Length: 639
Ligand code: MIC
Ligand code: SF4
Image (cartoon, rainbow, N blue to C red):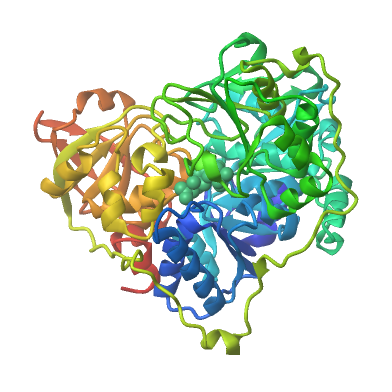
């Protein structure tokens, strides 16, 4: 039997383990990326490991999230990141150069290689056949220190594409269709690998939209083959030498196959407040819209924005709303400027935001109270936009542009305008002056790391005792996101390097009394339903609860990255052996967890005098030792 693309890349990077779905494996990481909101912590952790220079082929530190500079915190952090990159042999992508995933795809990603990034949308690189995986900052720091990445060998779901997309239907509609079928928890433990005749009809930006938003399936990553289309893209980026062909063998097998006929798809949306609440645009047409935002790492390529520019050209944004556009990278901004697209957008009344994450993470351009905002983004969790009462609808750039013109949900095919066809340019603008290359080892020695007052020292955890006891501080439901656990937004994001301060906001939108109660009670337990911790890679969703004394989290199931982050910071993740037991334990109950043998924990609900069977979510000896050491940092530095 031949290999699929996923197996080929894993096989070439396998350091330990067996390639059997569900088995623990360790793979070598060729490249790393960080962004500023997770990066400060990742570099503090890397520093604590005592390694002078990154051991990867290439590591890049990006600044794209914390771009609003309403105080000293964000600019201080940018300066810290620039100096620490210089110290340790990294490339530094300066603020203004663009969103990490878009820039990495354009300038650094390489087919057939591995990339680990401290951001959940790192799988964007799958658009050019790179195995790109999102993880917590600590796992990225370990990779920079030359350690392999530990994960479970994924199941490989083949998504067989046939046919061709019709006008005004685009890549976003493909991934929304996959989300409709598989839901936000349907991809946990899986790689989505795209195959079939339809693949060659999709250009790289389209492929990258699909692999990017595969993160919303909870997937380990998503992958396209590297073919002639990939070669054309890399050539236009002046990087033909980085191309290599990588396709599945004819006899390759998949654990499951999904068939999608591109020709049958229609414009779709994900309704509030989950990316899998998918409907056809035609089913919600006429709904009033108060804001439109186009951009984010999902849909901010040159092609996306030129499509929008073409639809707006000679028309005006509806008076009832504001349209904000954030280009994905400086390359995109430069090229839409030179080709006249930017002027068409401005003439139509669009507000041009800087090149970065911006409104996607609540960094400005928040919608009005109870407003409906249509966004070309990937996440629509409650409150994430910065306005708690707002509703976010996720849609393609075409559907966003249609809403911007009419002021209501509109199927772009009903506008009665000619479809805009944008071709991938023969040559992109490839000026990398906003990327500072690594210094020589000699020069790096002279660099002083600049730390502002916002950088608090890194916390360490003690080794756990034989018994963990305390009360259930909070009982949550299904699909709790890391945005629920550790909110982002313009006010809280600048505190990412300051754990004591950011911890005051844990579970803010769910129960604002949580931090105070947790501190007063000396910590305790958190209960959750299915898919606990889905969404972002932010390790602060584990670190901050750890700081507040959370000892274990007991759920029906976990999302992959958050599960790893919990173990990395010494919080024990457990699932109920019988999901029905979730209903028997209540918030406020006093629990005792005997972990004399951590692989056979014994849980007692002392309030109800109940024994509850639980399963530790620890799958390898390494993870067990790491938890027993009080977390990955103690483990890695031998403390
Ligand atoms: C997100 O989209 O939620 C983020 C902000 O990019 C996060 C990372 C973070 O919280 O810093 C992610 O996706 O991992
Ligand atoms: Fe930035 Fe949004 Fe992409 Fe996260 S999802 S990396 S916040 S653009």
